[in-house]
Amino acid sequence: MRKKTIKRNLMPFLLVATVILLILNVNHHSVSRLFPAPIGQAAQLYLAPVEIMALMSKSQSPSSAAVAPTRLIPTTSAKQPLMVGWILDSGATNISSVMNETPGLNVLSPKWFHVDGPNGAISGIPERTIIQQAHNNHQQVWAVVDNGFNGSFSHSILQYQDQQDMLIGHIVKLAVTYHLDGINLDFEGLLPIDRWNYSRFVNELAVKLHVHQIQLSVDLPPDYVAGTNNGPYNHAAIAKAADYVVLMGYDEYWLGDPKAGPTASLPWVRLAVNDFLKTGVPANKLILGIPFYAEDWTVNQKGKVLSSIALSALESSQLVNQLHTHIVWNAKEGVYFTAYRYQKSWHEIWLENRRTLMLFAELARNDKLAGLASWYLGLESKATWLSVLHTLRSPSIID
Image 1 (cartoon, rainbow, N blue to C red):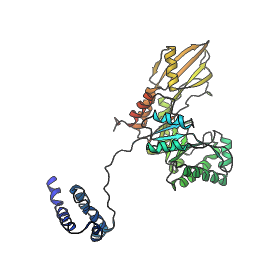
Image 2: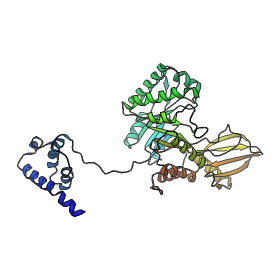
Image 3: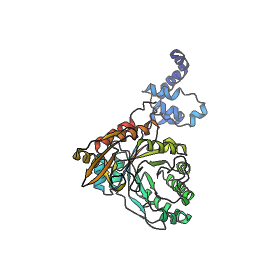
Image 4: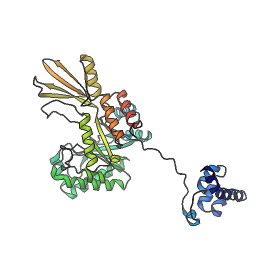
């Protein structure tokens, strides 16, 4: 094979040699006038014969060679998965500190904007210094726009086209003014009646943002019943319009449930991911949201939930260490479990710690999802962050 290739490329080599000899007899400024653009550029690289051969050995007609721009095509490489970090704190100093503790973060998503009235009213002011710091670190900034988890209020906007359009105009203006790379839309608790309205809103917002090369990601909760995507969030329509869909893979059990349980068990998260993939969200657009927190449940003697307190991943680990309580790995759920007694009350904690979070990262990697999003930065230890990062970006064993 190698000999055939050399013979086939012999003529381009002779042409290159002729070109070089001609170039030596003209000054540098006349090169572009004597030769078509590709040859003129190759002539200026005559001291690098490898690049010349790459340019001249392409099969193309004389006419196409005269008009096509010449570029050295970079080698292909796999796109790095996204590590998105939501952040609740809006202060520049605290955000900057958290960013320094999360190496490998490539998308910062601060909770900056809140829809708080009709006619496109939005509250919240971004921190320009944080945006600049992120850009200096080659990180994107996707500012969160939320609806306060208020379905009725959201309906009063989504049901009218003019209200939608005013809100869209305000979001786009803010994104352009503050040089944002993206908007993260977090409209939770929507009413089923707004299924079409919200899809229209997402589509129009995406179109307007894309004019300015600004991306749109949309946060969505898991379906109540897998495979029946008939609620307010039309997976296929939203995924078609937006750049990314973020599956909020947490709150499997919460205060409204009668029994305590994991914030996010592995089977539940896997089921939600598969459901999104089957209902119209492409894997390369799907970002898996993971929790950096757990619930400390207070239960009665029959196991019924009385109350709960959210603990950061770091706080829950510290609590377990302080109490010297025994933790057990629940292989079925993919989480650790512990129980303890305090002031005559029983407590249960399902720990989605480093081991569980690495399993989530492995799931995202093996399913070739777009990446992970963590709720939220600052709740985890640096060791946990690095473990999740390395798991997500390591080669898949099933490739």
